[in-house]
Image (cartoon, rainbow, N blue to C red; front, side, top):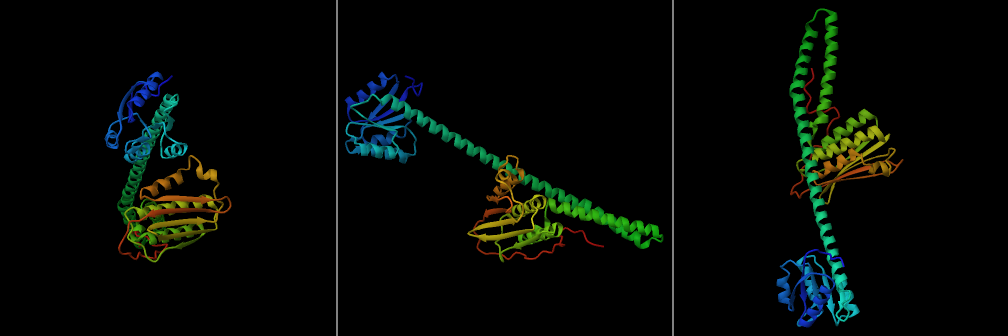
Length: 380
């Protein structure tokens, strides 16, 4: 018979009869198993023995001042996973069923030990399988955690790089364009030739367009409007969306918001930005609704549209990196994203972020003009 383990089995035998102990060992040896067995017969010895490594436990049911079910409970309380077989001459069907429900690997009668070897082999193999699965689950969990940390690091790196590029555009490109605009305006005021004045005004228009493009790029890289609060940023982005796309967009926000943790306003803004971008590209919607709410310590941002919707295949496709990116971004602030959609019935995206307890809510700025631009370099 093929043994479950090539090495000698470390067996703990809870038995008060020397004769029965020898009988069990004889059956195991006859079945081809190498066993190093230790016999004990009291609760104190059993508790002490649980501190040592064992491959399996075989226990009698009735012991002086002790029982196999009590031993099984002590094994479960210790948190150790190992095979536990009950071998008894006085066990009834009800007791056997109760033992199996409590986690016993098997039960046998002393009068018929022909199943002892296969039952022990099966129990050891099953325990090894459980342990291997537990190790695999642990390794998988650790791998997922490392991936989440990597995704968070990459997301933070991207935002830092975006902020650096936005500052470069603001300081270098913006300053140069503004200076150029001043120079062209001076030329336009002082030039005597109509052709030169015309060229100067044409150049001023070109520079103005370049400034607007730079501001738009800078906002996409790092929305300075967030400095005025999440509500103001959402008002600004929804106003820009409505003006640019012509799609009606309703924004509902709470009167008060607590001071949000670092990173949460940016994540909420990016999720709203990505949702509105997808609506513009794919939804063919006529109406969009955005709801920002706070209930039960969870900040929720819901973006819904009445567009063409998405199929289940589209929601679950392997290369849906936009949705996957939203999920990863939400995890950076311990949040999550839920998306529901049906073809022809629109799409709803919900970002949920649990917030730490705060003692005093603060009133966020509630208005932001569509034309407001905190990074504007000034008009001439």
